[in-house]
Every structure is written in C-alpha cells, then in structure tokens.
Length: 275
Ligand SMILES: *[C@@H]1O[C@H](CO)[C@@H](O)[C@H](O)[C@H]1NC(C)=O
Image 1: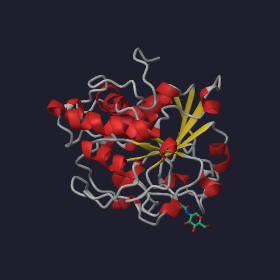
Image 2: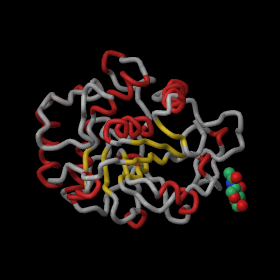
Image 3: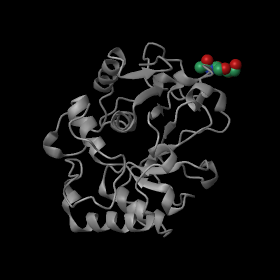
C-alpha cells in the first residue's frame, strides 16, 4: 500500500509544482508548464480505456526486453493479463509465441521510440516517460503533427512521427520516476542533478507505475545474467549478454536487488524467472 496515491497519467488538474521531480528542476518553469498544458489540451484523455478503468481487479504485466524471454513460449500467459505494458521499441510481430500479441500501453522516451510508423501496433496507448524537458517538447511536436525540428538534447536520433492520434497518447506521471529512483531503489539524489548513477531504468519505472495502478503485477523478460555471456541480451536481436556496457546513468545492481526483494516478498511475479 502506498501512502501517496498517484494516477498513472498526468491529467489537466496537474499543478505547476505538484509533480515536482528532482529530475525535472525545470518542472516549475513557465515554459515546461505551458508545453504540458498544450499537449494535454489536444490529447484530452488522461485515463485508461473505460473497460480497463472499471475492472474490479486489474492484472498487469510489464514485458521487459530481456533475452530470457526467448523460446519460453510465454506469449499466451502474457496475453492473459488485462494490461500488457511494453517498453520502447520492443517488437511484437514475429515474436508472438514468446512475448504475446497484446499491447495495452507502450511506454517510451523519445530516443527509445520506434522510428518506423509501420512498427507500431494498433490499439495500444502511446505513453511518454519524460525524463528531461526536451522529451516534452518532442511530444508536443508529435501530438501537433509538427516537424520535429530540434534534435539537440537527445543522445541518439529520435522518431519524427508516431502514428497515434492525440487521444491515444498519454504522459506517464513523472512522480513514478522520482519514486522509483529515490524511494524504492535508493539511488543517490546528487542534489537533484539527473545523470551519474541515479536514473532508474524504464523497466523499474513501469513496475513502480504498476504497483500503484494495478491489483496484481507480473513481469517477464527482466534480469541480466552475467554468468551466461553468450546468452542473448534482448529477445529480438543476436547481441549477447557480454556486450552490455557498464552504465554510468543506471545502477543495474541496485535495481536487481530492488526487484529481487519484490519477487521474494511475492509483491510481483516473475514469469521468466530472470530476476
Ligand atoms: C531459440 O530457438 C531458436 C530456433 O530453434 C534458436 O536458433 C535460438 O538459438 C534459441 N535461442 C535461445 C536463447 O535459446
């Protein structure tokens, strides 16, 4: 149980500093506030679908991108959940047997978004996880169908088009990023400076969201096993575990401990036993 309930998505009742996150020191700036207002004035939807909202028991699964999903035929078990969450550009087509075919939410940041419009599945909601103010500027271009003109501020090229109509687009409540980093995983605050060793992975942020918004939470495709360097890192490509780089932004070890604790306490179920 959380003492602070938090809605999954930002709605138009968000107040200037209510969702202040140390990662977003500019969250109080007038310009970011206006960006978010402009986005929400077009998307106008801040909830899940009515059917999902009215479920008495909401069962959610976060599908990670780990190679541990390969050849486990977990697809039908994954599709059994009410809400299937996928991250960044994780593909579904061609991998249905192992990862399922249903996508309820696709949570991404701009650098992780699928770049080819035909890669997007129908019927899913596109959810922005905004880690920095440029991410919100990017989403404004996307919902207004404007040319994405400013590439500065991104660490790799970003999608210029997302084939989703504004009512299918949401902004993940930034509170989950803050709570995952500092309350649950215990990453260093660094005076609120986002960067070295204190950015939670999108997987942990999605789990945090699900712990708030779902009655039952499962994960699949989580965990790196460094003892098997030849195992695939992701389920959709041949890059091997050994290729993983020491990350200067994430703390994989701390996140592993956090997730192991949740599994051990049976707060979450790990379908692919990678954690
Ligand atoms: C999965 O099965 C395919 C086809 O049999 C094989 O090529 C691949 O190496 C397997 N991957 C893993 C991780 O076991």
